[in-house]
Length: 216
Length: 216
Image (cartoon, rainbow over all chains, first blue to last red; front, top):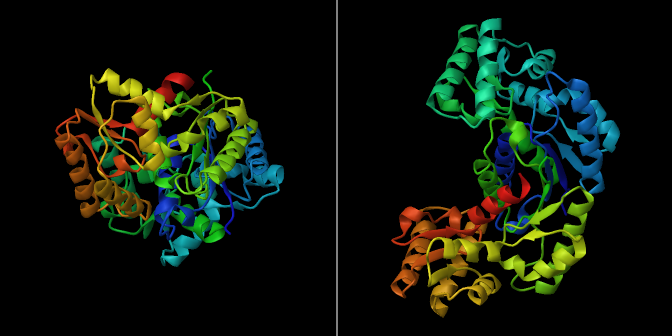
């Protein structure tokens, strides 16, 4: 009997659904009953992780405890930036959290990359940069990146947004990146490995694979 | 402030994720915070709704009460067959359940159909047939349908499964159906309106639209 996975979700809602899809796709299953039981709180009103970090932390701690009370045995959170609150989540729930930043660092090394470029929001890319010898976007490009993330969160995953994201990823490669980390869960919604000359590390997929290993 | 939607899911897991996707797609949103908060229990080990109905009913009642305790204010269940247990779910939780069969009947009438064909599993298609003047598959075709559902639940949504489902839907039209109800949440995973000469009523989409109306 596997473990029940609690998902702190909604950051954003589309990324959470993409994560759940990946989780199912990566689970070897001959029928429904082979899948992992997931209790997901898809809460789109977690305060902004970049501009209201303290309020976000309190909300996430409360969600983690509620997921535990609902039966979750292991937690995961398909949002890189929110992992600034990993310690508060673990403390409030007493449960293990499958850590997207740690799992990504492992995946980067596993793919043989030494200088990964990181596409991420303020706190999220800093968490990756603390763990990896990372190539980051220059300020103007980072502003363009945040603009694209806002558009994706508004539901726009069209050609212009895709082209813009591919251009920013290429910029990291020009700066010497030997892999690109999609270090914000909105990125893989518009960027695929075929858009790049180097490996793409999809943090959503990395997290989903780690959850399958932990919960099956 | 909208209402928190509790989702009794996992029947099957892929249908639940497709439902969550529809829910987001149908929600007018300029950013994350405009989406509905959803607490979903994606439980792939609900006992078989067709062969172990009593055990399934007990499990679903327990899930409904737990979703209420976790903060859900309205319930929905993206599985037609499991609606045989609608009364038990409402009684155990004290919450309103947005009823997929009732909402579908309304959608059928709204589309002007009078003799809808219903593709569904044993209990699910019976629930629709009680509510509608329905065209149903003959026994041999129904067996072929159940076989296709099993293949979808095992992850096969390939060309052969799609062609098989389109063939069964066409059979209903040959028998006089003026619309086809995808009365099992696995059906829309492999059948689209373009596969048919008559309107397709997607019960997953109908349920998602009703949830958006109820919770926004």
